[in-house]
Image (cartoon, rainbow, N blue to C red; front, side, top):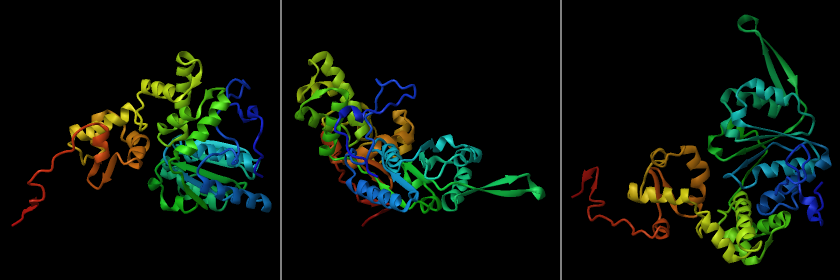
Length: 352
């Protein structure tokens, strides 16, 4: 069932620390009613959960795709809460061997949620153990080797696998096709981020006015996790410099101190744009060359930095590499690259 929204703000607190320290809270919502944004996905989940509860069956396997910080892990925990079941969490890199996966699967109870973050990073040999587990709720143990090899099929309790990925293109087709519900999470609208910031501020006991919330939301890169992180930094600034109240000017000063500009770009974002513009004449440039120049891992650029810059139109991805857009030149206050009169005259062969 979908839980009723709490009227007491203290009930929104959830302890992250198993020791029971009530001073440690999380800003994650605990029900679909509290979840802000991603309306179509929330509606889909509400229908699927209600139908599964009526039939007394576990949910179908679910795959969430999207950049970091958009709520994939939060949704997995909400689903477990709505279904009234336990959630067991792991990640692709942590499942190095088939035995790691089997140990988790064989301890699942009926209806449990098994959440795998970064599921695209599961080793191929481990992934193959997932196929019968997802389809037939069984795993095959192999004993001995060679001519003495024999298998034993171990039946599993029916469970729901929820996978989260930032790069769905790296998932194999056999794995992707075994998910019954596949949804892409998109960047949040500013108005939804304002709601999230106000809710988080209430939980944290921070005074914030509407212009202060709007200004913080504008710089949050369309991402709830970033919005909550910026809110905490602005809260600290407000407590020390502004009598604890977050206004528009307080948010501007605090986030300026953090190096976050009015488009939500950080120092790393601007450094990447300047590298494309100044070092590579606006591009195109390959991601590996950019990573080497910036001394960052290419995966960090692809999964963390690049999505927002692409969505916001600061860079363009082409078959030859990344290019800085006209918007990027204007934002950096740099002149556009002049077009050479020779451009187009030679295209492998001289044109007559």
